[in-house]
Length: 144
Image 1: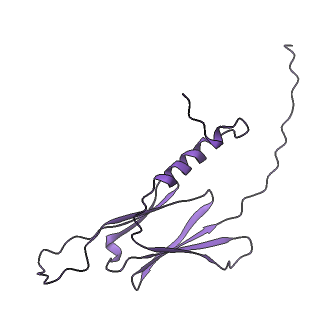
Image 2: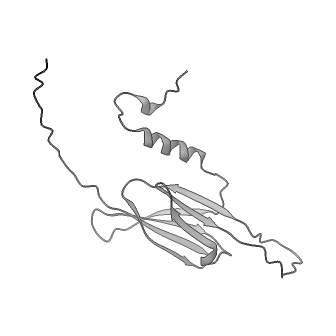
Image 3: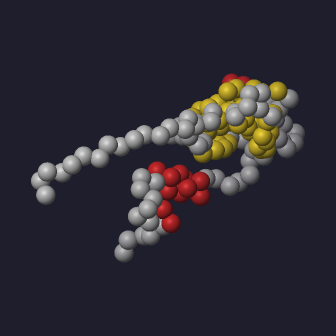
C-alpha cells in the first residue's frame, strides 16, 4: 500500500525535498542538551531577517566545538575527553558529547559563531528572495 502524505497532492509538484526535511525534523534528537535560545535580532538593513541561536556550552572550549552546515542543516557538535590525570573526589560535571541540529530554509546564511562566557552564539541572516516573473512562450503543435 502506498503511503499518502499531505505533500503528495497533485498540486504540490516538486515538494519531495520539503517532505524529507519535515521527516528529518521529526527524527531529530529531543534530549534537551544543551539548552538553547533562538531570538530575532533587529535588522540593520531593511528587508534582512536576522536570527541568533545561543547554546549553553559551559565547560567546552573552542577546539571542542564544531559548527558545520550539512545538507541544509546547521549541526553543532561538542566533544570532551575525560582527563585521566585528574583524581576526582566528586564528579558532578560530566565530560559529555552532544550534537544539536537545526534545519535551515533556503537563503539562510551563517554570519558568525562566537563563544563567550560558556555561551555559543551563532548569527544567521536571511536575504529577501528576488521577485521574478518569467514569461513562457506558447508554441504551436503542428502534429495534431
